Amino acid sequence: MRQSWIIALLAVSLLCGCSVLQGGKLLAPESFGFTQVAPSIYVEAGADKTAGSNLRAAVNKAEEAIRLAYGTVNSHPVVHACITEECYEAFGGRGSVAKVYGDRILLSPRGLNWHFLAHEWSHAEMRSRLTLHAGWHLPQWFDEGVAVAISEAPEHSESHWQFLVAANVPRPTREELHTFKSLRQWLDAVHRYGEDKNVQRKAKGEPEIRPVYSAAGHELRHWLAEVGSPGLLALIARLNDGEDFESAYQKSSQQP
Image (cartoon, rainbow, N blue to C red; front, side):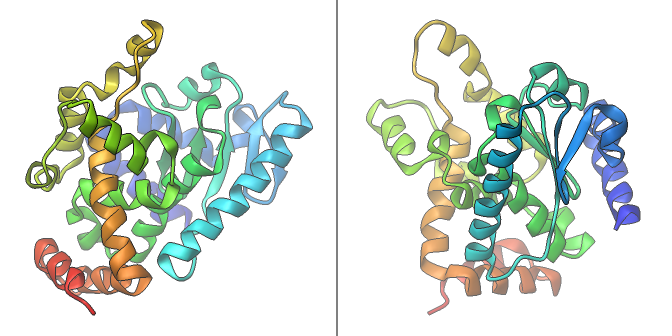
């Protein structure tokens, strides 16, 4: 397990840079300021007992959401919760709410709920079910959209999508969404649509917007409702057999 995690870490670091290498410290969490509160669950040292009990409840609810979507749970990530922003930044979490490094999930103080935990867990679960080749070619928009749909985070909800539509906020079309295949293309879109400017919006008293994540959630929320876990698993099986994603996605969408 650890060897495969390190291989994944090194591969992703080629794309993402030093933040992923900082995440490598999670291999020895107690050496870098975390305290274990339950098997595979760590919180930043100094947190009160309530933080630990809340995190355990969030882990249980997130695992239930993963099981509902995938049918079973193959992945069992180690969860690390930061109580301060300094802790989160020290592990490479700048500019995000939560992150996943292989089978290690890192939560910021803003992501200490089951929604963001389930989101990152979905990424880990998806990777645990895909071959290395299939995982490398999985479109980023699909991976993120499944995670958004499973997590049910209010920030990326269907109601937020409808708000964007009603307010005529620029957002990706379905056709454009499908072009966000690589992590770089995804991050470029997040920047282009201003989704990385929400701190400034909040400071001005303006509503936050998340057009890219919400677009992916809107697409995959309806798809998952139609095909269920059998359709999701069928698509994963086709990808593992070497089928092209768009072909596999179309076939899964047509399943009775």
